[in-house]
Length: 505
Image 1 (cartoon, rainbow, N blue to C red):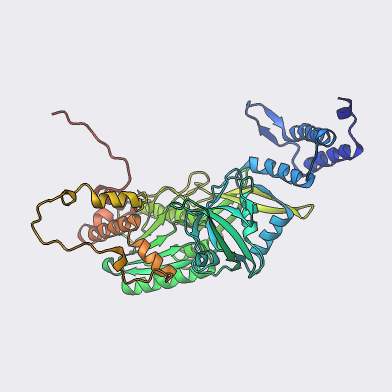
Image 2 (image 1 turned 180 degrees about the horizontal axis):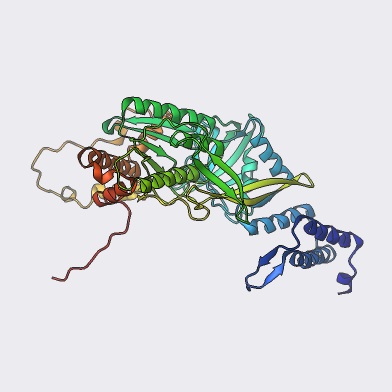
């Protein structure tokens, strides 16, 4: 114990510096509530445990067999403190901080993937939610839901998400080697990807002719996406289409300013989009529309969301939903021009916090959550997400084994010597297709094929057709958003739980 009591001057000085830093940067009157419900002065707690921390460091120096990298130990210790506060706060080491600075200023050199925001440092992989169209990863053959387990020979176990994404970025035309696990493949797949500028192809538009509906998907929010939605709205207004589908599924965010500009296309000038409030509940920022809308008031907007719709995507969907609901309540059943917005799909991600990157010594930075976003109705999406007006879960194609079983069993014709009434044509073999399997499809072709079997999109089209029919034949039933939701739910069964009452016979 004498060794602990008589620490070196270096660690005594370190303790004083650490404690002084906390006393300087924090309000000494601020109190934190501990799990035992007792209030303790924050500075006092930090002072006591900083002393313990310094003692442990000294003990490790004197007793540990071999400390290989004390700098890395300190980085991980500080990061552990910040990541324990919330999932989005973290400590950025010099390399990670430099990579983030490069990605937010000037050209962005990476591989072009959208990652799973829920990943923790203990996870041994990084899930690819989507690839940026025609980006390096897309061209190399990386697919959605691939799991990256290794980057340039370094396994991801224990690596933070910021560190992993920083390793994927680098100078233009340099190569990065990633090892991937893919469902249906027994062995890992290795891809050598050349880093490049991530092109801003963030949206894709279609006109669904059979239903007279325009569709646009946004993978992220950018200045380009604002322009594309504006042009699509002008075109749909000119043609008098039934509705517009705005697909925000797998949209993890992007520029908040772009989300505000898109909201301006639908809302009156000076309409509130979102505010930010600090821990004291004080409003720190306010974002409102700055121009007059161009969307036709009578054209309904159906917004598709899922559990990977996050941040700016949730702000746009939640903002339009809140304003539409407010206008509906003010209308009081009267048939008048009002914003008709309906959210379809599953609960969104629930990322409603704001992070600030603050530079500190040793060329590092602290990424700290400083405030929360609040929608015009005063609600926050943090940890809650956007609740759809119509809950519809995504259905994916059955596994190959199930498709094979259904094809060959469970039918009369699968029995030997069954009675044939008509001459039945032989089933086409997959090899008879004229399509060249070596030819890579464009993003538009792949999206068109994917959307053709998308049950959430098809359900949305059904809701649009019901709404349009009611607007023509019984407009009173859909005169407000509230009435329209009630009418649509009564005429189309979505994902809501059914009330089943047993009948005794």
